[in-house]
Image 1 (cartoon, rainbow, N blue to C red):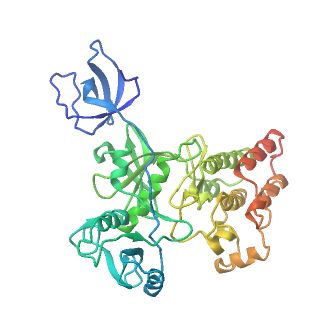
Image 2: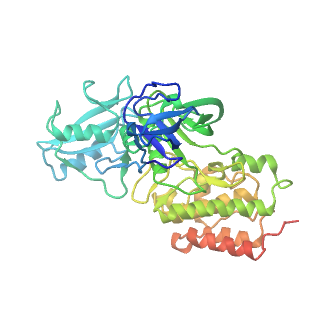
Length: 449
């Protein structure tokens, strides 16, 4: 028997035979309310708050598992046609292949296949349904599906894909919509109500909504195609994470357009806007150390799970109704062995990551120090009066920002320890959490006059 509060999923359709029954469709999610006198029936509530009785054997417990990303060792990113040919013909084999970003058609890809010591380049484009295709006959939701199809058979290519030419270093990833359904993260569109737009994200609007009788945040994807992979990858990362100081994923809606990512709703919005709108007349030193500890705890958890955020900043920290800070925006977050594409937030990114693409938990520690500077500056943009193009060169030469007026000497000492040029000289987030606790316990965060 299911305990009250358990989420169950419908195995079959059920239509009511008495006024006390609750009808549902196959695949619907229900929440168990309690037992009945008949062991074959239970009382449940649907996600819109309606309650009723159902046969217990029509449902099963809803299990959630982390959505698995598919690594793409054959994806070489932004290389040109000539380099792809050099790579494939240095040790030519029939069926040796790689995939690259198209230089002639930005946003599309090229499938490069070696045959008889020559290379054929196939244009991989998006069709009218935002699916990837080579010949407009077979279509796929991501590159992994496309490559697997042509590994099974040539299907019009010069030969079957036999051996990937693997890229050295960190790898790109793909994810498919079916994985969210199989892993228990799919939320039906009919169970989500959009109330009002509360922001604008990288891919589309962010809505305040209602789901399971609670306020939620709903990120919508304005345009699908290539952006859908980035959008779903962010959601897949969140399925593997669970901590009170990270914004919690509730699910993904895939049974309509646009795609939705549904997360917990943080009533007070982004920390950077909170800092700017309240200022030092409202926000106390106790508040600031609370925000710092919340974020450090969330980042310590990421560190323990071998995840890198890559975009830690005050704009990506949200506050709930109790002013607890939660790290958000996992669009750039990955496991340490996985690469990420896209523009980097220069002023928040560690020098080794900007120069050489070397991301680690220690590069997140650098970003944390910039976050602390933002926080004690009450939302000022880092590196004031420094041109964006000059930031990296100045940092490499040893330039660091001055202590904000509201910052104590102890906090600035922590900040500068996170600013060490060499990553191995920076503290871990575990060290940072312990340091912040010590500072707070010692009462070192008195108001700055």
